[in-house]
Image 1 (cartoon, rainbow, N blue to C red):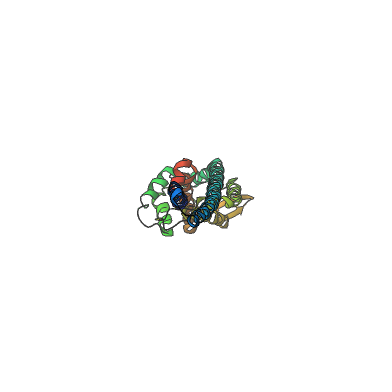
Image 2 (cartoon, one colour; image 1 turned 120 degrees about the horizontal axis):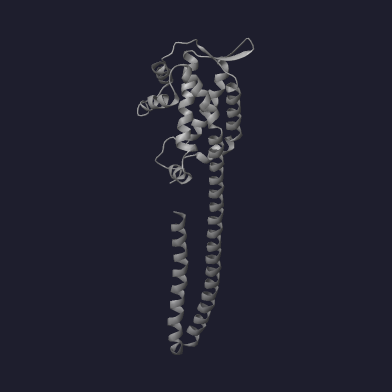
Length: 254
């Protein structure tokens, strides 16, 4: 849109200069048949033409210089955006395993695995997923009726570290703002990241210490939080972390 306006403006200036040049040429051809007063008017017109062409040329030069400067700034800004998104992707991928191990440990304790959990959750993707959905999915997959607590060693620490990672990367989240006009929720990916951070913080609420050992209590509320975290985690992996940068930019930009 900006380029079209620039082309119209430049075309108008060039058109005006050409028109004045055409008049000047015609007047010059008939110069011999003109009287003194007309010649004076012609000289004045030539001076005016020189002034206008000088001004028009300067304006055209300034517009071209401004356009290239603006394009250079926009390109630099775009490249920095790509760098920030790539940095975010690398950090999320590098630390993804720590959370995945936690989910695997919990799910295995209850008789299923992350693959089954992901398949089951995908059945609801075309429907409206609510908080009760995550409890239902967990209960449907659960096959082992073991004690509702599982010993956690480094898992709680891994959760804390992942929260710290998300907080340190928060300044990059804005680069995932969706700019497509037809998209209603332009902060979709940003909301996923913030939601994951908030839910991971809630896992600490289900920590119990017995005989100097840390345990995660598994009940209806913690099931909801755990499965919701898992859903956000693999969604971000599929749609952000593991996404080719060009494909991701196509989703974000017009």
